[in-house]
Amino acid sequence: MERTHELVLGAMPKNLGEGLPEAIPLLAEKAPSLLLEHGRSWTFAMPEKGALDKATRTLILLGIALATGSESCVRAMAHRAKNLGLPRRPFWKP
Image (cartoon, rainbow, N blue to C red; front, side):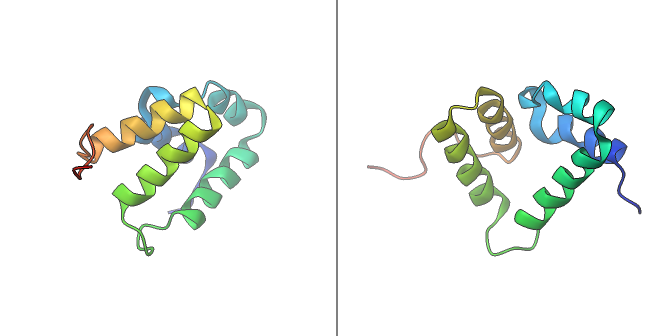
């Protein structure tokens, strides 16, 4: 299946929930090739069959979002974590 910016845009709300940045639909409208490249880069950086599982990748991205102060990214990664069934509390005892 050929990947189009419409497919990338369509997958984002399911994947990111309410954390979808407001700029993404605007990007799809004004620079669809850039949105397509964003989707391609994401797939390359976070391959499904990479060394890290989805939960670990999501927690790393959540940490980056928290460190950079990106509210929409924090919401997006929290949404992903919830969909993956990750607990809200740490897995370990301090």
